Length: 363
Image 1 (spheres, one colour):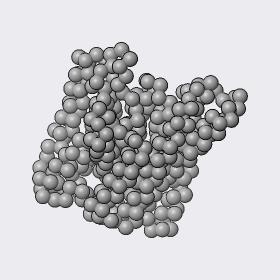
Image 2 (tube, helix red, strand yellow):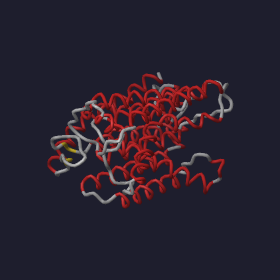
Image 3 (cartoon, helix red, strand yellow):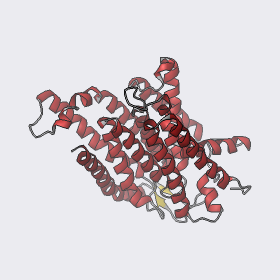
Image 4 (cartoon, rainbow, N blue to C red):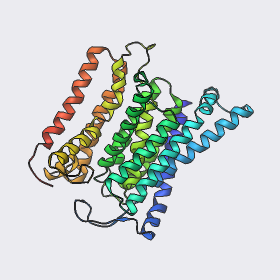
């Protein structure tokens, strides 16, 4: 029953996205929300933006419907046909309603911020300030914190920084057709496997919606793309991935083999986007350029300059992400010696990326 509900959630979000993309695509042409070729951009023809709002609606509408039904059924006892596995978790969904609404509001605000930047670029530092305001509000209002052992002030700061870094790492990943959506899809699949392993149905359900939305969008975004997600989409996806990675439980002392190193699962899972983010920032700072201004120094760009076309370059990064994602899923379930092997595997993948990036060519 749980598997059927999960597959239904994926299908609903994918279907909504597939229905909405042609609508937002037509609106983008009307509103001149178009990404035109030129400069460091790879596409050769104008491509409409708007994928971000389509994915947000595909995630948001089912979430609101599920929360509303959970609250209604919890108050009235619910109809007799509600499966016991769902009825068992109604109280938990009701308890998390406020958090869900705050997070969904944060995703909408992040999407709106990105959409504004897509329409009228606001400058990297203004955008960063906006991100901090949105993320800070969500973390504080929803009491959404990681590493709580550090104490409330420090864990709050760490949580805000984590979300901001992932938001911008995924924003940086949106530099080639299908890249950001595909990487987000792989990471969400790994997270849902981790959530399912410990029975987190609330988080798992949200991840299923994220999987469906990104998969439905990827149909239109895989190279050659017919629509872009823009900053509205990449920032929203980064926000949702970061938040859901914080809500997923990795370390459970009651489980055999569970160790504290399981807390590193999100870092291993997002190792490729984080590496790309860190390496590009390092290059820009080293060359005394604004680290928040885009260029063509990303891993994907270097693969293309080394002779790959766009599709093979994107698929190469998918495979690298999938390898680290598998390691992340296994990490909480293996003994210490195997965890070291998985850590070595992740570092090996990043080492391959570093070798492929080690070229003196200029953007």
